[in-house]
Image 1 (cartoon, rainbow, N blue to C red):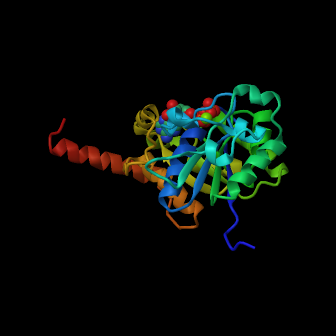
Image 2: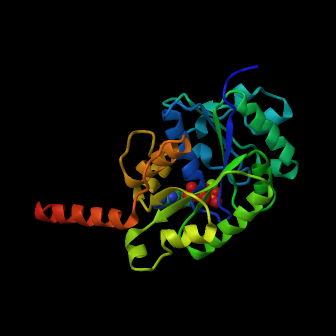
Length: 273
Ligand SMILES: Nc1ncnc2c1ncn2[C@@H]1O[C@H](COP(=O)(O)OP(=O)(O)OP(=O)(O)O)[C@@H](O)[C@H]1O
Ligand SMILES: [Mg+2]
């Protein structure tokens, strides 16, 4: 028997669309790879695949999960290795028509194959709670639920957490994304405690609203790739460290705001404006 540790299969899901699942999967994948974890990212969003774009790997896809499942290529042929971070590989989603026949057992099979060669398998889940979600859950053992501090996103996250519990997924941890300290301080946005109280999940990370995320998304270069020290890059790296058991304190949005104010004060004094 091999003494290699068993792979971890981690679903990244939200219920609501557009809250940052794929961005988290790409950045976390790179950050984990940088920490020496052999990491596979599995695009389970067969309807609207995007993970390849965010990782800048869209031009290097030859085969996908579809051909692997059909037995027309080997897993190694379909995996797209990241050139700068060879510890990271993407298994691209196949044609959206796969949704017509894909079953939870197919996803289990793919995940088990990935688990043979990787320490961590991150699964980028589609939005919603229909078949695409059920298939993705079948491949997972743990989950990260990501939400923004908006009432509708939190309500959807709550529904998803119920379904994950029913499926025996454990642990389930929370990432709160697009946090705006000023809006929170002005009570224009749900506070961190409000969200954690409602969802009753341990907080794995807090990601500030950061326009560098949008720039990096458009470039196909995750922020964690090139040592950016933007707030979101630090947050993604910290999520990776916490996932690997390191104790890293969470940022306090109120302090983040004070930090920004202090920086503004310094810039004013040096008459940069
Ligand atoms: N912390 C952030 N700051 C600013 N923009 C962000 C942040 N996180 C995500 N975004 C932006 O939000 C948009 C949606 O992100 P993403 O595609 O990761 O969401 P998703 O949950 O995967 O969406 P879908 O449900 O459609 O798959 C993107 O334009 C992304 O750049
Ligand atoms: Mg997505």
